[in-house]
Image 1 (cartoon, rainbow, N blue to C red):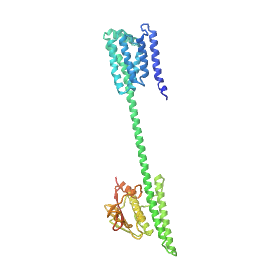
Image 2: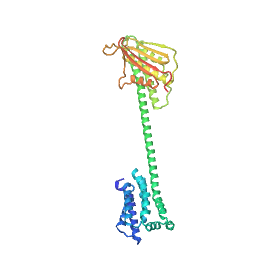
Image 3: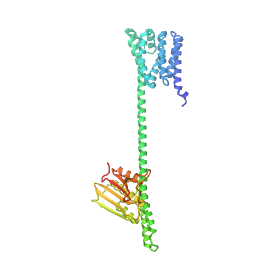
Image 4: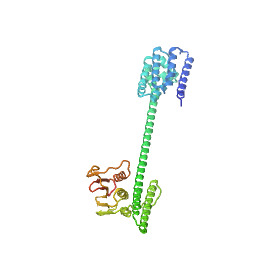
Length: 405
């Protein structure tokens, strides 16, 4: 809506008041269209037209009307009851200063009317307004000022209170709308956070599954190069191991993608830690596995965490460890489940690292970051260290026997 269209209702209301005021002057012999009455009518029309867009200006014009009325002793016109509209507009659309100024102006205006205006002027207004019985009672009672003052106060205070009520109601609606918008933004932010977490989880799962399987397949393929050309049985075993690893990886990837999309799938393969160790052995790597303590069944979520963490540890051992040295895997069931994987790496110079140095995750990587994220989510932790003598790489994970509340 353009600016001039916004002013159309206000202009119509102002024009209506102006026409009614001029007709009232023309039809009553005791009222002349002198400068004072003309000023009152024009100012009243302007106050009504501005009470919505400029309530402060409308309130100022109302006081101009009162000043002219008192100074000129002009008859009080019936159209001046339109000041009730100004009172409503100041309370409804005015600033806080205008609201309280208009509220104070109403009783002050009533006092001015009954204190300084001639009684005939006031009682004639009451008579013309259709309240002749009230005017007669006020006149006969002698103390007409109190009666007329209360009446004028009620006439102006009622629309002011109505405007104030609508003002508070609108603010309450806006507050509710703002609260709902804030809640919607919060829900949207939470949904985005959940989606990002799901994406990160999916990336970790795919990284663990594909990275481990490809490392095993690559190790098996490299070992096939050293087979005798006549060792067809060995070559068949190697190809069978490659096919098994690829098939297992494909099944795991399908399971991960299906669980993310919410489709109905068969139960996931049991997270067997021993199967991971046997898979690495089948790739040609020597694995020395030891288990200390009595194994305990883990809840499903912790079982998956332990499986994925050991899977990533073995993947790193295959990718970065020496093939001619064994991979040591230890599982300790004392308090928490402690999984430790150690593999021999190429020797580091003394200037490359200290005797014992924690390894930091590569920024943006999925391996160490993924393991830490999985463990911290269930209350566990990860420690990764590199040693010079002997040149080894050790990863230790603590998995609680109960999931983090």
